[in-house]
Length: 327
Ligand SMILES: NC(=O)c1ccc[n+]([C@@H]2O[C@H](COP(=O)([O-])OP(=O)(O)OC[C@H]3O[C@@H](n4cnc5c(N)ncnc54)[C@H](OP(=O)(O)O)[C@@H]3O)[C@@H](O)[C@H]2O)c1
Image 1 (cartoon, rainbow, N blue to C red):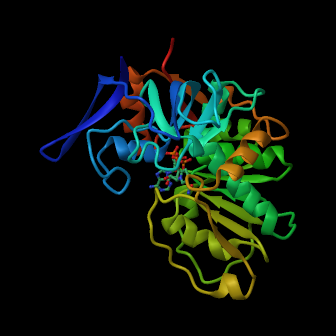
Image 2: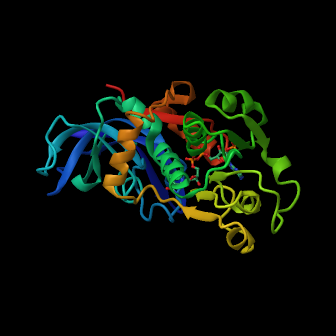
C-alpha cells in the first residue's frame, strides 16, 4: 500500500519538496502505525523542510514533529487498532518520518491517548507549540514569586508565543506581548494581551546590567538580544522560561539579575520531556486549560504547506498552521 507525504529531497546540496507516494511499511515490534488525520507546522519543521542538518541528518525525509490520528496497526500491547492518539516530538519529524505524511510508524512509548474532550484538529491546533507554552507556564508557576507586574511574552504572534499569551491571560495574569508585527496589535489583544510592545522600540536602547523591574516573569520564544534585554527587567524571584532561538543563540548578560534579584533562567525542552509530563499537559488542555484556538489557526493541505513553511522561516506567521490530510 502507498501513502502520500510532503517529501523533502536533497540534490547536489539543494533541497526541494514534493507531494510524493511512498511505500507503507509494517511497524517494528513495540511500534504502532498511525493514520494521521492532522499535523501542524512548527519552526523546527520548517528547518527540517529546508535542509537544516542540525534537525534532520539525512534526506529524503518526511518532516512533521506533531501528529494526531488513529492506530491502524498496533505492534505493541499498549495500544489497540482504532485508538485515537497524539504524538509530539522525540525523534519524530527529526530523523523518524513525521506527520507531514498520511501514515507514521513510531515506538509506542512516544504515543499519548488523545483525551476524548479534544478533537484531533484541536489537539494539533495546540501541538508542540502549545505543549511548549504550557511547559513554560508551569515552570513560571512552580518557581516564581507572586508579583503584580505583567508577564512578558516574546515572539508573541508566533505559535508558542500566541498560546503563551492566551494561557497566561486565562490564568489571570496581565500579559505584555512583545512583537515585531505592528499590524497584529488587535490579534494580540484578542488573545488577552493588555499591552503591546514593539520589538524595534524595545531593542532601541542596549541591554543594561540592571534595570527597574518591569515584568514578573517571561516566556521567551526568541532568545538572542531580546532575551539579553529582558533578564535585567525581571522582578525579584521571577522566572524566564527560555524556549526558542529565532532571534539568535547568544545571550549577553551579567550575574546581577541572578545574584541581586534571585531570578531563574529556566530551560524548556518539550520535545524530549517524559510521556507522563506530556500526558499531564494534554489532560490540562482537555480540561481546566481548555482554549478556543479557532480564531488563530490556519488549516492547510500538503499542497499549500510550502508557502506556510516559507512564511514561518521569515518570521511572518501569526498563530498556528494546522495540516489536514483530509479523508
Ligand atoms: N524548547 C522547546 O521545547 C521548543 C518547542 C517548540 C518551539 N521551540 C522554539 O521556539 C521558537 C518559536 O517557535 P514557533 O513554532 O512558535 O515559531 P513561530 O511561529 O515562527 O514564532 C516565532 C515568532 O518569533 C518572532 N520572530 C521571528 N523572527 C524574529 C527575530 N529575528 N527576532 C525576534 N523575534 C522574531 C515572530 O513573532 P513576532 O513578530 O510577534 O515578534 C515569530 O512569529 C523557535 O525557536 C522554536 O525552535 C522550542
